[in-house]
Length: 277
Image (cartoon, rainbow, N blue to C red; front, side):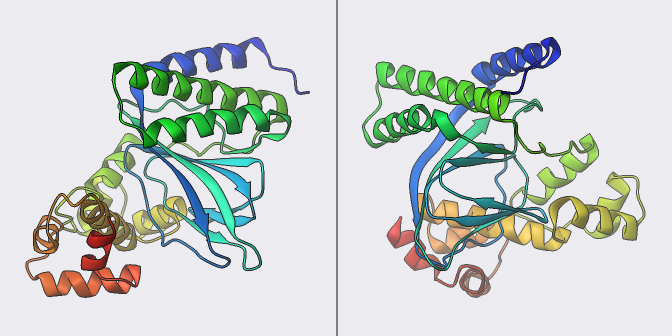
């Protein structure tokens, strides 16, 4: 067992205090991938994405770095990080996916990758309780229990990081770069131009493009396209707008252009996505 110094213990206590005040559960799903099934590159703005593998294996690519997911492991993807998942071609892949909304500045100190190991039974029990509560109508008591389970989940994540070690957390970026990512994810997704983005980050155009690709693994335009399409998919899945309204809110003056772009990106139509919910 790896020992923990007083400084790290204090950091984890402060981290839990912040997490208890500035986070809330956005969604909790049990995901099943067919062999070889994959997701497109995507980002989550203001969402911390925790994936816990129950069975099967998959590859998660964050930026440019791949992580092999196997049973009883967990990976954390931070807000604004470009990532994708691909299940192994031999077996189905099953996991719990928890998306946690961050209302303030997320403190560094959470791990990237965890081997849950001996704590699996407790870890899975928390996830099952959270999943069950998300399926049922929520009252005041249920909301309190959900909140309690989320905090317990954070505590178990930190405990696993303490006892088993964890690979690198993501490197921090400048406030200017955070602002750049926010701008690229803001509807109606008008591309501000490389010159403006470079100026925001106090770089020349080429240096900025190289830096952006080094951090996210993709170009600024590809990053924005991913954010745009995933925002549209979310609107359609929640049925908060029609296909035409979704197109307009995502910056398309012509809904047919939106339908073609959506189909090219997701290999399905906006109408089918909305009907499926």
